[in-house]
Length: 120
Image (cartoon, rainbow, N blue to C red):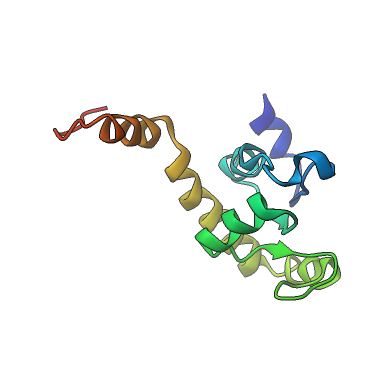
C-alpha cells in the first residue's frame, strides 16, 4: 500500500521525527521510502540520520543550515535534474539491499556463529 502511495510523488522528503526521537531516529522511514523506487531527499538531522547518510554516502541530502550538506533550496534545485533523480533512485535501491529480509537473516545467522552457505 505504501509503495503505491509513494509512487504518486515525484520526490519524497524525509525528515526526522520530533526532537525526542532524533537521537535514535527511525532509519526504517528512509529505507521504506527508498524501496518504493521514488527519489528520496533526506534531511541530515540527528545522529542516527547523519550516521546512516554518511555511511552510505547518499547524495540526496540536505540540512536546514547547510554546513557540509546542501540547503533545502539547493537540494530541491538539484532534484529538478532528471539525472540526479535517477541517481537518488539507484542509490536508494542499492542501500535497501542491506535491509532486505534475506540480508538481515544472513547477518543474524552469522552473528549466531553459522558459517555455512545460505540459500534463502
